[in-house]
Amino acid sequence: MPKKWKLKKSTPLNDYRIFSTKKKSSVSTKDGAVHDFYVVDAPDWVNIIAVTPVGEIVLIKQFRHGTGEVTLEIPGGMVDLGESPVQCARRELLEETGFTSSRWEQIGCVRPNPAFMSNSCYTFLASGCELTSEPSFDTTEDIETLLVSPQEIKRYIREGIIDHCIVIAAFGFYFFGD
View 1: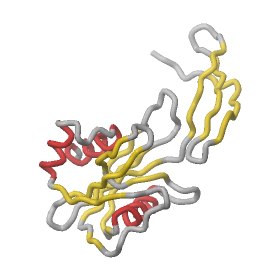
View 2 (view 1 turned 90 degrees about the horizontal axis):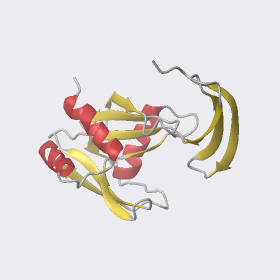
View 3 (view 1 turned 135 degrees about the horizontal axis):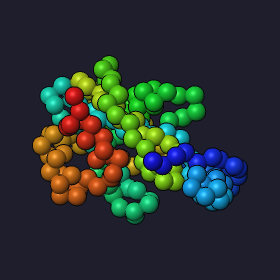
View 4 (view 1 turned 120 degrees about the vertical axis):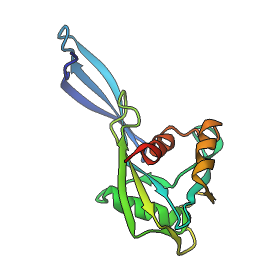
């Protein structure tokens, strides 16, 4: 059975505002040799499955620089220092879409890539969402909001229209959870 390696040294490398990198030197439990690993430290993230009173799900379209494409996904973002995941979820839903909810439930949590990332992504269900204001985008955001049926979400995932892995994980919690 695999055992936890002992961390010998952790060296900060670079800070890029939304994440930082470090080198971790760890001792192998198999042979005692020291190996270097590179880790991305990022704040935790949230994803929100926002459902209206008539059962539609709030989706957003936005340009993503990593892929150079406009993606279809759910509202979400980075948890700010001193902020809880649910506080972040409430803030991000309002900022990105103008929707609010009084009923919040954490329905899941995943590690985006534990091989080299240290953060978690929390998924929240916001039920009975109502449009209460205009979105207030960050200066780097240009977002379109759509209301879609759960059946359409499943089709979008099957057809690769929704291809963001942590968004698909969030819908896994939503569709297959208790």
